[in-house]
Length: 626
Image (cartoon, rainbow, N blue to C red; front, side, top):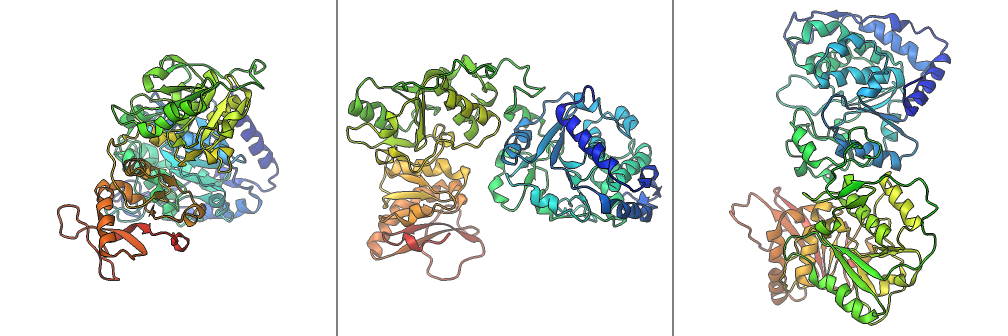
């Protein structure tokens, strides 16, 4: 297949091989979809544009299914036209999902790939001027030829395998979902943003022919949703009760896709969903994408590999020859840290444990290097497309940037939330040669081979937190709070201190949105705050001193609540020094115009309330249940 991509060639061979094994006559390939009452009734009337030969298509499906293949584990996404592709969303599938699920393939269909695609509705595609409508036509043609899973470009992966979802369609080989119901529609509407099916499925052919027969009648007068989009799908598939698999709407449409501000969405709020849709077109997100876009595959992305003016410097391809990289050697005695805060918001007390206490304690030629945004600019980078100077970078970007700095300069990268606690001795972590990691810290010689392959793996989607190690020999001399620098290097740490009334904080919210709140709380209280992941509650259980445990991410939204706790605990100690456990709650619609704290004297809670966290006295943590 000259001119096709490697993946497309593989998919074509797979499809052609499958079709050659099918003994039945594929008679439905000559079957038309009869559409009745075009423009004869109101659009919302079931009789308008109804399918007249649904029984024939149902017979085609029953003839097709006995010898049908499994749904191919390949994700198809489409981006055609001149606008910048939303790689910030695409990469959640083509990088992260594919890396975590190696049995899956991925293909992004752009104008170049579409030119090679043989389409049934080629004439409609060529005359159509709206790219949203073109994408509607394309998804059916692609799935009909190759099968697999189609996912809209404005949907993000929530990092769950789709294997379970695909297996739900074992009986019908066609899976699709209803959109969230809205009050302005007289009946539920099927969505076409996520479709899983086998190649050659009769329902795909039926949809292709249905659209062909209504296109010229409706396209000049109605929106695309009635011609190629969800409402056309609903009339073709749902109203005649075609056999298909329909999982819960919340799997892929946890809320309606009108999201004018994607930054306001907390994806942690959808634990049962597989994806979330932002609504690129209906939410008007072209500007947001332009300002927030980041391409993890810039070396391969047709839209981004030509760009040269990245904020941090020039894109340098990964070297193919690794013979000159260092296999063994002594790691330079340099501590590197990032500080991206504005003004006086740096965590000087934590940093001082390295640039003052550590250097004075160990001596012997050690130095300290603090990098801010400006000092990082102007060099050559393997991943400059991931780095931003106008907004916060995420966890992947900050960690990969740190790897690039150590790869080029050598030394040890130390997160701001890891600090030195030794007494005049060098931690064992810093005695290793060539490459070492632990307690969030990693070190390497300049141009170290092992670090290079970790860096390259990160570019291709391997998970972050590669350098966390609870069993590190450094743990006796280094306190690691467990947070990534993605939160700490941007956090505006307060320059005052106050008494909390506890010796330690635990962040068990498992939410990125609370990290800066918890870090500031720990810093101004002068106590450590440990991030506790799922399955690591033993850290809390083993703590014998008085501690505060945050268990709900909502606490990050209410700094006034956090600010009130030190005085509140002091008052509580004076009133009732023998208390054992304290449950913090938040109540709204209570008739107050400002934040007020009070003690609840009833076992019953208001329906307008929720628990946010727990305060524990010593020797009680083992009884904490999340």
